[in-house]
Image (cartoon, rainbow, N blue to C red; front, side, top):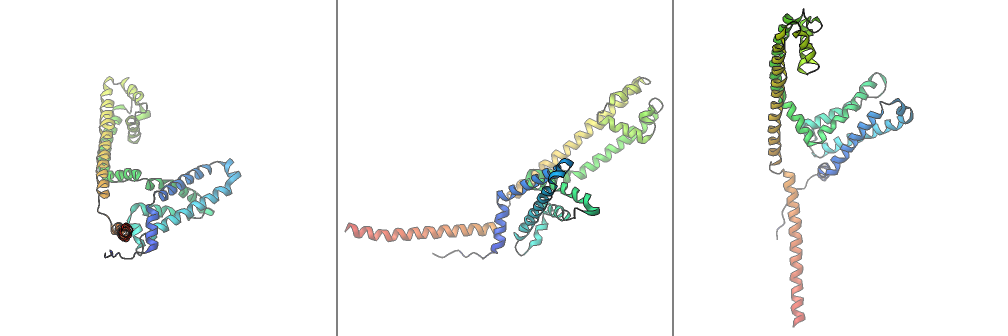
Length: 288
């Protein structure tokens, strides 16, 4: 029986690919990110720093070393083309955080180094596919959100100018200038005690409620629902794209792996058939 010829692959790259694809690898990285988050939180306590600051520093260095090793393994998984590691935006994001983490934690950049350690917690987003899906959805929603924000800005401006002319003498605290009027409208659209502003205006103008109710309907209910609708629509599209990616044909590496497994199965089957053929003449000789 002719054997299936399979091209020899870089054993190091193959081992790194298997390591990166292993669920345990990703789980260890997630655990390290969570440990890093706990350590950063503990560094905000002066009581803890007085007692175990050296231990926390050591843990930070070990976690940073682990992240560097992770990036190196992922690059090595691409064999002779390690630059393909940067083809993924999430890998670029992780690499940037790792690079910034190399800033020395002493001197004028000490505060920046501490802030970067906090940013490592953001790596949880890249570690969970579900979180990556949500972030991709938000990024794809930005163009539509910009147009909705532009429309909302126009509505704010119109109501701000109208509110100034209507109420700046009645309630100078909230309407004395256009910027203050816009800030009051923001308070209204977030429902932060907006009825107090409305009742103050209604003491002098009984029909002032029309202004406030119409703005709440336009600014809060309509606009917020537009934002939600855009996000949900893009989330559905992102899920469909994710399903399309999962349904993509297997890569060359996966095909070669399956060919190797098939070749080994055929070899074992051939050996078993050969053993069975050798046993049959012996059984016939015993019967005679």
